[in-house]
Length: 516
Image (cartoon, rainbow, N blue to C red; front, top):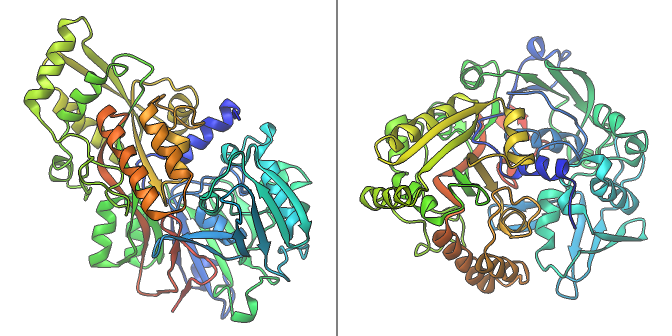
C-alpha cells in the first residue's frame, strides 16, 4: 500500500521528529489574555505557528500541534502511559473478536461537534478516508491507507485492517484519534484547516498568522455537565525562542508549556513544575543504508564506537539522558541487546580498514538549524576529528528544508533525528520494516522484519517482549540508528496550573487543565 512521496515524507517528519524543544502554554489574567471580567483564561506559547488546524496536516507531537488537536477535537482513544493501555475518551470501545482481523468501534451517544452536527460513525469513516486520499497529503496517510470501514449504525463502525492486527487499537489511539466534523471537511481542506470544527473543549475564534490563535469554550461540549472545560478562553501565541519560552513561564507571563529539552525539564523540576515522560525512542544518528559510506556496516559500527553517550551531557551540560538503546525507557527493554559501548581503538581500526580498501568514511551530517541541534552536531564533529581516516561535515538547514531533504527525498548520508513513541506499534513497523512506508534510512533486515511481524501479530505481553528483544538484537547488530540520548517530553508549568494530566507521549488533556 504505497503512500505518495509527499505524504510519506511528511509523516516521517512527524514520527522521526527532530530534537527540538517546542510549544508552550500558560495562563494569564484578563489584561494579558484579552479575557473579560471573571473569565478563566490561559495563554499558550508556541515556538511556531500551525500550518493547518485540521487533523490531516498537523504533527501529533506534544511539542508541536497535539495540544491544539486536544483542544479542538479531543481524542477518541488515547494511550495511557501510566499502565500502557489504550483507553476510550470520545468513544466507548474498540474491540476485536477474531484476533485483530476485524474491529468494532462504538461511539458515545449524544456527542456533537461544536456546530451541533452529530459525532457519529459516518464522521469517523469520512475522516479516515480523507487521510487516505493522495490529494489530502495527510501526514497520517500511511496509517489510513487500505483500511476498510462499514457503518453499522450511527454509533457503530466495523473496521478491517489491511491484515490481522491485534495491536490495531494502539495505532488508532496515536495516529487516527482526532475527528473533524464532516460539515467542515466537505467545504474543502482549506476551510477544514482554517475554520476547524471538532468535538473538543474549544473552538477557534480567530487566527492571526504568525502571531496568535484564540480559542473559546465549546458550548456544546460533551462534558459540560461536569464543568468542563475549566477555561473560557485559550490563546496560543508564537514565541520562537526557547529560552524566552521558559523565562516567560518563570516570570509569570505564562503558566505552562510543552518541552522536549532535557535541560529545561530538569531545571523546571527545581524552579517550576514539570511532568516528564521518558519515551520509547531517542535522539541519535540515523544512517542512510542506501548510500556510501554507511551502506557498509563497518562504517556504521565505527561511528557508533566513536561516540560516547555519557560525554554528551558532561560536555554540553544539556541535561541529556545517555543511552545505547531506543528501548531503555520501555517495559520491552532487553539490557543484553544494546548497541556496542564506545571503544576508540576498535573504531580507529575500522576507520583504517575501510580507508585501506578505498572506502574512507567521508560524510555529511544533516541537522535542523536549532541551537541545541547545532551544538550536538558540533560536539560530535569535534569528537570525530580525533580519529584518523574519517571526515565529517555538518550541514545545518532550516527545518522545512531539512524535512524536504531528509524525509521526502532521502538525500542524506547521516541525519540527526529524535523519536518519541508511546508504544512499539505502529511506529517501529512503519519506520524500520524493510517495506515500511516511513523507513527513511532504507534498513532492510530479515531478522528485524520477522521480529516486528511477531510483535504486531500478538497482544500477549510475553510474546511481544520476546519479539521486541529479537528486534533489539537485530538493531544492535546492524546499527541502522545510533542513539546517544533518551527522548523526554512533557509540560513545564507554574504552581497556578491545575488539572495537568498527560496522554500518548506527554501531551496535556486540554479539557481539564485550569488555573488556580
